[in-house]
Image (cartoon, rainbow, N blue to C red):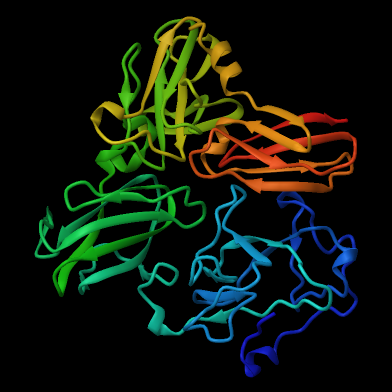
Length: 448
């Protein structure tokens, strides 16, 4: 295993006592905080096939961490014993080189760490190493933009910036000489990745900027000419009006399709119930998109103040058919929150735009959709076949025994509808779990 250069290794310490049951987790859900002074595996035969930790960098700047190469400016791929994830959905953290064990951690961000020891003997993590300033402007060390109204200059090539937005919105590029005008030349491509849970990359241009989720986003600009001056801007009118206040935004109209951006993106809409009855809410989106339907408690209608009531919220997932939620006994005047959380795109063109729709009465579609979207598994001849709409987001499929030990796992390819994995286990009852982005499914199986 490769180590940092000697001055850095000198500050790395290991826990000589070895693993104890309470030190590590055996799944993302049971992950334990990594010991502050490192950790130690005297013999991998005494630990599971993989162990899980949570970790937060104490560096004030982006830092490299993991089974790292000795030269941070020239990382090399190694044994893939360390996997660092940004969130429970399974998205890996930024790497200086794809496939390496060198991960870049953002300050204050909590990560999941999976360790798969492959050799006997001691195994020790290196401390986080702050990146030199020369790496600034790269995807894993973006330039932090605190004031969007400040003019920036980009040279030719791609430069990455970190932008923190308070609500789902659209990033646009303005001409600093004409703040109300859109920049029309010099920048060819704008792309955005959400830091905490990317899901995917949204692409934009000077006319239509990329849509972003609330929170920290990494935005890359590619310039074709040198020294282009610009400034960032939000485009809240492209999502919801009045700084995305739900009640001042775009409401749903009965029996009409309300389209929303075809992007990795969260959209909130509301619906005011016109008369007592049962209503059906439909989300036509990419596979794996979540439809959440809940209630809104109006606290001050004149000041547009409200609270979302998350208890009792109903959820459905887009699969081979639309996601459908039916709510009974709604009363006239009540306000319903209708949310779409998308982790994929349908495709190119206006005809592929996703939409939300509400109709009165029982649609008759929800039961069929539920059957089509349900997790399906089959095990035979040492093989496990899995079908789930959650696989399309690159979900992890994990198999646990009745003692909650993970005995097998594999990640699906992006866009997959099914997968097959080897399952070499003793006869017995097991639980298969599909960890999608924002949702999960599980089912028991019997292996004979």
